Structure formats: C-alpha cells, structure tokens
Length: 466
Ligand code: ASP
Image (cartoon, rainbow, N blue to C red; front, side, top):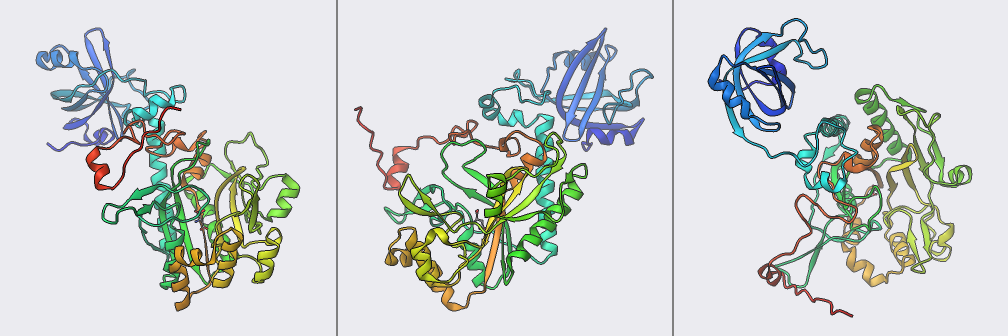
C-alpha cells in the first residue's frame, strides 16, 4: 500500500490507509494509547486499544520522535473528542498494522515551543532537530516561496538566471576573502566570491542584458551581529538601464511580492521614498532611516532607496581612501583629475535599499570607462600596473564593446528576517554559522590530514608560545 499524508486521510473515511512519520506525542488514557503522528503535512491521531493485543503491546513501547508507519482504518472521532485546532481534528486512525522504522533518543531540547528560549549553541549543533520545530519549518517554506516568486517574476520580465563560479578570484566588496589552495597550481589560490559582481559585469559584455541569480556571497567577516560568512543575495545586472529603471524594477518586485506572500503587511509608502544620502544624513543622522509610521506595528514595512552616496570614504584606521560600495561603481564625474585630487567631493551612482531601518541591499551603475576605473583604483592606493594585472579581464573585455550597465543585490536573509519579525538572520537560514563562523553541526572549520596538506603544498607552522 502506498503511504499517504496525514492531512489526506480525511478523504478516506471508512477506508484503510497507510501513513508514516514521527511520533509527536504519546498519551495513555485509561487503557487507550493515543499517538499523534507528525509528518510534513501535519498531525494525525492514532488510537491503540487492548483488544488488538499484539499491536497494543508494540505500541506501549513507542516513545516521542520514533519514526513509524501505520496501516489502519480512518474513522470519525466520537463526539466530544473532536479537536478543531488541527486539520485532521474530526478523524482518527484505528491501526491494523504498525511498523517501527527507527527509535529515537530523548531530544536535547523541546521542539514544540518557538525555540527562542534554547541556547543557540544547542540549536545549531542539533540543527536537524531544531528544524523539526514548526516555526522553523514555516520559515523554510516561506523562504522557498519568496525565492520562487522572485524567479517567476524576473523570468517573466525576460531576465536570465545564470550561475557563476564559486572557485574564482578575489572581488573587492570590502570584506576579507575565503581562500582555497590550488593542488594543481602550487602556491596559487582561488578566492570564494564575495559576490558575483565581476562575472555579472562580464555577462553584460556577453550581451545577456538582463541577468539575475539567487547567489551565495561569501565574506570572511569579523564576528558581527546579523552577519554571516555566507549570505544569499538576489543578484541583478541590467544593460542600458538608468538608475531609475533599476530602482523601479526592484520596487515593483517587492510591492508585488509583499502583496502576494505577505498580504497582512502594510507598506508605508508606495512609491518607495527616494532620498539622497546627503539629505537623509541631514534629516535622520543615518543612511538607514526607519520610516515606519508606527514602530510598534509588526506588520508595517517601510522601504526606501537612498541615492547619490559619496564615492569614497576616508579610512582613518588605515589612513587611506576606501570606496563606499565597490570600485566598479560609476562616479558622477568623468573628470579624472578631480577624482584623483578631490576624492572627498565625488558622488557616485550608488543606491542602498532600506527596510525598517536596515540596509537590505545596495547597488550602482558601473564604470565602463577604463581611465576612470584606473583612477578610482589609484585613489584606493593601487599601482597602475597591479590594477591591469588583477583586473585584466575588465581591461580586455571592455575594449570589445561594453554596454552601459548597472545592478543591485538585495539580501534575501535580511528581508526574510524583517518580514517574518525574526530577531536575526540565523532564524531564516537553514544551516547558519555562529558569530565566529563555525558550523557546530558539522564541526567546521576542522583540521585536515597531513596527506591533504601535503597535496595542497601547505605546511602548518605552529606558533611558538611567547
Ligand atoms: N555586488 C554588490 C554587493 O554584493 C551589489 C551590486 O553592486 O550589484 O553588494
């Protein structure tokens, strides 16, 4: 007999069906054993009575979280036993056959609460159990719905979803790179992408015009709340589009997404306010203002775009200029002398996407003039010959016909955390890492064998005790 889902049993009243899942609860009432069976669809009550002796004896051993399969007859519950709180609250299963697939130890924590009260170390170590929790399952489901909506929406607008390499070269997005040693090229390294920035620009040279990817961005950040070594972005790049067209697209996408998937939410203002960085700083003292009318209201979403950021920022610690976004961003002047002499005065075609006081994405128009690009890198302290070497593909590709282009990369995790009123992004990421970038479930990072190190031409030098 083929197994059906718990919630499908209602269609089979009076018939024999087969169900399977985890034992959610076991209760004994007088001589009757009640088991609530849980599967991906929901709960189903199963009743074991002493008249069926063999089954009953076996059922007495069953404990929570065992995985079982049951064949039995679907019956109406007696009056007074109806449970309106669950979808199968009118029916129960009278077993004819019971199979125990696996037993389970007592779980290290309870999974029938919201889970916020449990230490995160424990939840992350036993993530596969934590994800059995209803709240987490809901979060995973809604995450998938959001991704599905985005894919559909952009595909309908003729965007092409293209995946780009994970083993690549350093992309300066302001964080440290994760490096991967090369076995076949001794002494050389790949970098994991901080974003697909360079590839998506090369795709514009390739004539794709409308690109997107649900991409993983890998950044070796120092521990910071609400940051992860890997996060997921909706990466977009478009040719021949103005800044306005890019922002309009993002606005349309999010307005429709909220309407479809979160109808209980109210968007504070449509069109989303667009304000310059300067005005925003003057008015709110931050570039991520929280524009909700009522901050107590959990269902309010205040989106905004902040535009015209300064191109450069002075890094006091390192005593050098850095970029506000990334070096491929288009300055609002092509006057190279000015870029080099007065970097503090240069604005950029850069924009941030803000939600309820959080930056949930940023993007920019890109420089296609190689002299301007070189000048930007020079301001950042790079030598001309190094720039050409590290970004040779730009200098080659842009000489073969490059369209004006720009893009943006809204973060998926932050948006989800905000819209679901979750306190941090780890609640919406299936397998997040700790603040110091460890995966407690897999126990990584971890040591590797001498053999592996040798193959990779790597020697670990233990630091002497000082
Ligand atoms: N690559 C940028 C980022 O990851 C986004 C963009 O400029 O499109 O923030």
